[in-house]
Length: 305
Length: 316
Image (cartoon, rainbow over all chains, first blue to last red; front, side, top):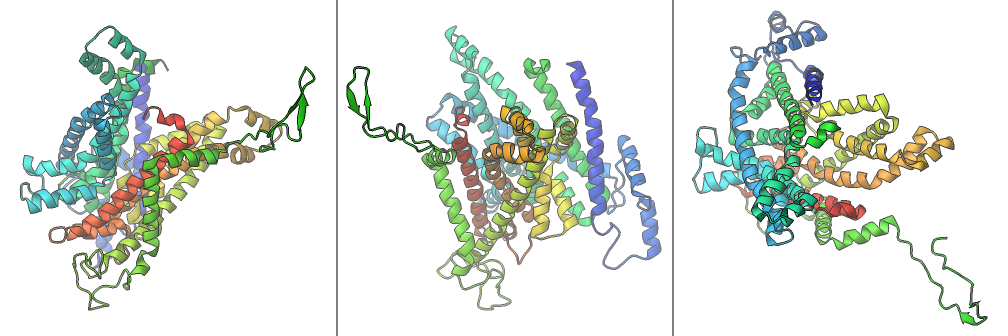
């Protein structure tokens, strides 16, 4: 098990480097530089600016320099907001995005897992169909429709909640629902399918035959085993949450990573875009690592493979 | 051969006792084809059939919609002063008009053309790349497979939206850049799928037989292995399309990709979003179109999967 974990952890290093390399190449391909403007910049100033940010060096030198600095936690200076480093930008935006993501994940689990459990236990009844209808429709609704509709009804028409920003619990509600709806739909479907499969297992029948209370069987035998696939899906789901949070942050004007990313791409702020892309990718790579290890812990059968 | 009646031509036969019997009507064995089975099973799935009809309706609306009304999709108040912006749905403008007085019935149909076209074309590109990549990796196996799949693993972890955004900035706005951006970030799933299939299928004896007869790799892949993965590829296609529709709409909503006066459902949603405060129906319409289409594609995809391989239905 330890060997497996060590190998898995070491494997993430080349992956991150390849990701940085790909991002780096993409950034080099963006037409126009960060210092080009409509008014035109004098030749010497442009040369000095490029020299300051190391943009006059050959690309491979820039790349290795970036890796070297990144390994030390230095992702460079923002090219449009001169007084801030990329780490500053991340420091401002990341907590907000994490906050939103955690709230949405929490809401999704709170709704999705119980809905899936009820649907599986009451298989082929009204409850099951209701939960499945919710999960099918919830998954198909795009964030950029859910967000504006919620905003219109609860903020603009009823005036119960603020329309935008990230200032207090009241302003968290609508973005959380926007990001959490599709996620809860997914959790419901996943939990239901996995529960139905587990309910067929022999050990469940044995537990029932022993005369254990239904509650105990469901909570201890079925639910625990059913949640393994839910955990393993967390990695790919994180990518989905990141996509969703881009839109949610855009719609509700939340100062998180997504909003910064979109505006930095527009400003051609290379260093911020690179930093954010690398950060987001690393989060997913790290999440997949954790999921793989957790998988081994939750399901001992995996370790022997 | 397959529809030949058993015992054709035999009119009478003799039993051991020497009695003769009339042979009766010849027995015809009806062999069911794979396609026939699929169609029969699919047509019994009511949700999937309904979804298929709604999708057909969407496609027909997108195709003929722009010709049903006297306005063109980019005809606004600057070219035609008689148009009034922000009209509610009425007898002349069935879905109302937008901020420039352009007819939304026509624009939604044009948007459907663009959105569906991009989704289908991107899916096609992705499938071609995925099938080639996956079948090569799966068929060659060994070190090559390992390297090719490691590369897929690396990319698989990446969040697709940031990279699609960067790609669109590099390639510029428009339909072709959008296609490329969507294709580059989503060929991974089909590759994995096809490779997995290849790994199982190439164990079959008929592959060995073909190789023994001197068939080339290409022939084995294209004639023997790929046709057997066709079902899975078709299902993957239907399940890939909704992701493409959402991807295009998301990028257009953020203001990248298709931009006004051209329209996609995402662009229309984005325009609706800007007018949300005063004219909320402008975002509702494209929203409904996108959600319904995505929903229907999911139903059709699930329906086909169950029809092609009924075993998948057991856990449902």
